Length: 308
Image (tube, rainbow, N blue to C red; front, side):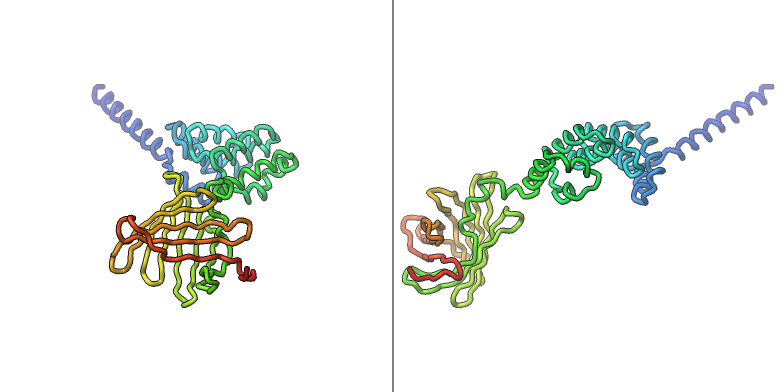
């Protein structure tokens, strides 16, 4: 009898172990669940993410992928609370809130959809083209409020274009012929915006064919403009400046190829309403005690008669 009980006990332990192994085999990993999702097997993905979340409800990525699985299965009523849980856990707010708005729009809840789109924009959503073209938002486009959302997305996508600090140097933009004060043409310059208006690129070519370029940008950390100039001759200048009195005023250091340092200061300013721009560069070899004129140029728009 004792031996039989002992065998039953061993058998019970064996069954318990087998059951534990079976449960472990059924518990998917995030890697396995993500593979289902990537293979677009959304039904299996949803099952896997549910099992993962049953074990750990704080897994924000699992909530996000579960919501996405339901979304692709067109089970929007299930996707909505899953997106809400992902948002509460702080997972990719612009992305989660946008998709939550889409799910709400598809269920006919337009007011909630608008509210979540506004929240997405508040956290930096910048998908202007997506807003314009996403068929899931077709019902919302009939509402005049949608135009306001499009404008906000445009501002998020190109923030520098809508920030006056970044627009202070716009007067320098254009194709220019550059003359010295005596009327001799000394070069050409093309100033253009790049990076969505967050940087100005200078492209200088002297009358003798020597090129130079500079990048110009506003640094919100210091409240100053920065210009980094590099010439074909190997010189470079690092400037910092501010916009005042209608023009840009820079101070910097000039380094030649031998490493010799000179102080440099520069003013670039519009010449009233003439459409012309004046640039003056001065240098100092005695730590700013005395200054010598290094360059003075009058910028005239290409195609405009340079005569007074």
